Amino acid sequence: MYTDIDVQLTDEHRAIQAAVHRFAAGHVRPAMAELDAAPAADAVLDPDGPWWRARREARSLGYHLAALPQEIGGLGLDPIGLHILIEELGWGAPGFALSTLADSFPAVAVLIHRPDNARLIEEIVQPFLADSEARLGSCVGLSEPDHGSDALWAFTREDPAGALALATRARPDGADWRVRGQKSAWVSNGPVASHAMTWLTVCDGDGTSRGGGIAIVPLDAAGVSRGPVTRLLGSRDFPQCALYFDDVRIPADYLLVGPDRYEAATDGFLNVGGLSVGIAFTGLARAAFEAALDHCRTRVQGGRPLVEHQAVQLKLFDMFTRVEAARALSRQAMRYCFVPQARVPIEYSTAVKVYCTQAAFEVAHAAVQLHGAAGLAHGSLVERLFRDARGGLIGDGCNDALALKRSGDLIRHYGT
Image 1 (tube, rainbow, N blue to C red):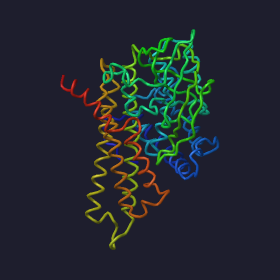
Image 2: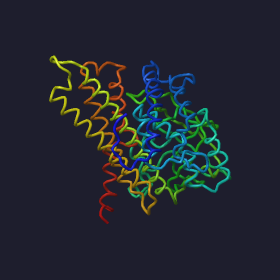
Image 3: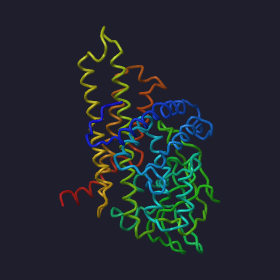
Image 4: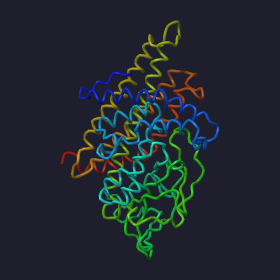
């Protein structure tokens, strides 16, 4: 284990750190390496395959309940405990870490937005709390064929006129809603989820837009279909596919968020999402640095170990610094962004996403370089980390687009 210099960590924090690291090293990393080597993208669907084995093991340890309060049966981790869990799982495989966290989104969203709704507690929250076999899971249906990163700003302060209106639409149908539309082939967890947190345009009966909304759509409902598993450069442990909604009927209260609360709810989601992605990729950066350091301690070139060459020493120290800076930024932002306050300080969580994924890519790139030809060999740890790291610059919003949009919040609020 690495040296964690955070003097505020409690004994409980360090116990979580050790336990999750053992799980990541013993279960997540080997299982995800096996999945990555599978010839077909749909290997992730095999219920007896490595991804599902690791998923069920994570469920048995309760890691899917990390973000749920202890009084209802969750782990009730504080922000730093949650940071530790995500980083350690991310050290094993960031896609698996984010997949595990995403599973709880419907239950968490119900507790935030509809805590007094007995039906949603009974149908969404309680079954998830009781699910030790990984039968229930979630994905986020946000981007669409004509909306990539820009989907994040539909019906928000950046788009007050609704020019970016999502093509997926919900119309009232008696006491229910009918959902129709398509989400792009980049719906993470889409192939394996039981429910989709679906971002959509809320319409009147005649189709007139009222604004944005977020609905829980059960993926076994009539009218739902999925595209094939998308084969990506990396992150095959966070599988993706398109989702299609053909007049899918959902109960009225499954529309968790309507136009009146859409922007605040979206900010809250992006806040958690940005932090989680940044933290998971901090784990990847650490994994790449540690792999490079171990290699350079034993690999002999020019008659002596690589660590005795000054150029290598400089490179290793730069990698170490980036990892420590990523952890320091993401952990401090985790503390700050989870404090209840009048405005979600989303510029900080976005900074975490942008900085930490960039650091992960640069550290993984350096790790491949230090391994030389061995780092290019398909199936090596650093080769897989490098491919996974590249996806972090695009997933959950392209870094450049996020930085440009969040600069508006920075300009409006910094120092005020």
